[in-house]
Length: 227
Image (cartoon, rainbow, N blue to C red; front, side, top):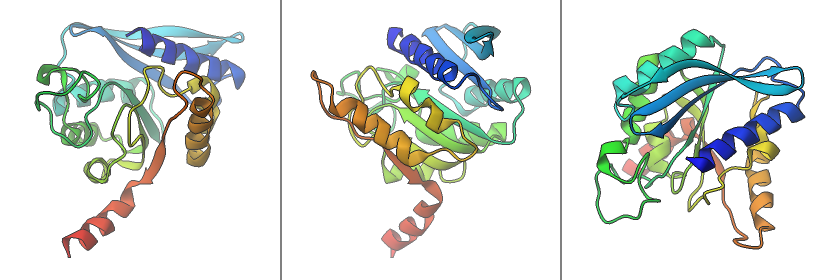
């Protein structure tokens, strides 16, 4: 949880560095416990970011399509837009479905036990139910740059931004890359390159990988593999 809070603060640093949000709006859904979550909007006022709480949640099953859709519908009602992008930070286990045992806590999408894990297909279904096609879905998670993931998201996102391997707890360096997320057409190359350049100079763990996958190309790949 503390790492998520640092990520949010880094996004705010990125907003301040750009002197505001421009035409963008940023809403954040974050859970401090399995039964306590908050949806808030980051606003820019007088040279700094402030947080406007939109809703407090008690228990909500955000692992189901309906739970995901309910959160996104609140986002859409609070911040109507011509296009949307989504960043998700959590643990992840790649294409493996939820409930598979014998994985460390860094290999479960959404949580370390089946109760708090989400199948990628359910995420896609929730986005479809909310009627919010994503310009991109960026996973600040381990192991999600895979064709199976891109295939599940092919109808709900134009691009998948993710890592083929582990992502350290610090996650994406948002203060550095935020300016590449926010244009009308995000600069996917610079998002990936800046991530790499940030981690390659880290003395404690000089490595990092991030990729951008065009999800619409996955249909043709699936047809080729089927043949």
